[in-house]
Length: 484
Image (cartoon, rainbow, N blue to C red; front, side, top):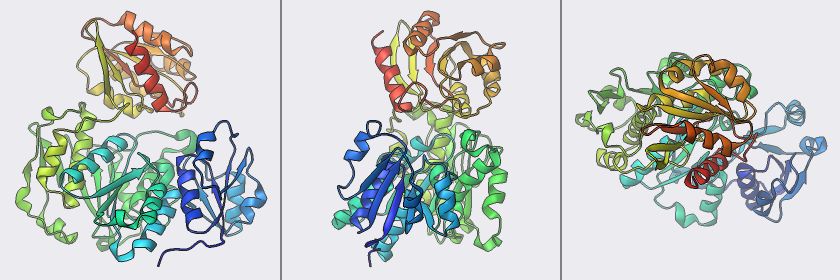
């Protein structure tokens, strides 16, 4: 029986992709939906135009009475959970969930025994690439999937599409999701059959304020998992032992999910880098615990990372996590190998733009935190001219010092965080300020670079001081570079 929200008064807070997806799904299911957003119509006109005509819209204010009279409140990821109207609603006992939880509950209600499994990817860095690569591996292994979440369409919009065209769900085996910490903050029953936490490095501390709270948010991806489910963790990440403790907290040993690892540095149960090759290592006992009937004889080398189209040590880690998840989800090694040897990577993730006068230009606009920039820098043997800066997320830029000293010829700084970054690194690397002039930053990088160098846009910051989002920033970088 399909879940019904007939005549229920539901408020959706925040109108972007998630808000539109949730509002339209709820309207389809019979709810009386009102969307509220603090922005004005001009700022979010494209999202308003995408709404079901029966959805009401309130802009510029979050009316307390709207929240207090709701039967359910659905919060978009970008909305902090501690705003006053939400605090009041909680005190009144009104249920508050996110778009992810809504979509998951509707999915299980609508498809019940024929429900596809969920594979979920989170982490500070590498989520989008790993999600897309996992989806490609499953596709190459003849496993039918649907991909969404923080990549592509909102999951609520995808579920609405399945409900509107039930035949499209036939044969669907997995829904592959990229999930942010903000999305995980508002789950309740959400349970992925397979999950990964790729890494956890300082990010979004302007919202979480403490690293412990951010780590706990990421660990929520596993809070409802069962022994037959699995989670893949990064054995090389120093935070992983703490992650395991959080995952196991309050559970008896027989009730924890099956834990596997990936590593570039050591042999682990899962997948690891061995003499330059990716190697599967899965014990029959662990597979039996998951009720998996797989042939352990497949353990061995999968592929040489030198054959990957995507580059960088971080992409070796992304590939290992995706390959292990794919295999544990029933994908054969042929499909995994085919995807690894053909996957081109994603826009704005160490994306090659052009070579000009012997200098390579790379767009890594998705490098919105310090950890991402460190991974990017680590993968370059060439000297780098780094373009960085933007809206600070309360980051510690001193962590960049060792690699910048080793690899960077110069750092060109832009945006609101330029002065803070400069104070943190200018004694170990030559820095130049370009204010809010992105074109000037690119021009100065070109003037500095010599043949064989790399000009790398990897900002270590959010984009909102100068651009709509990281995609807008990356596309402007590419446009300007291609016009040089």
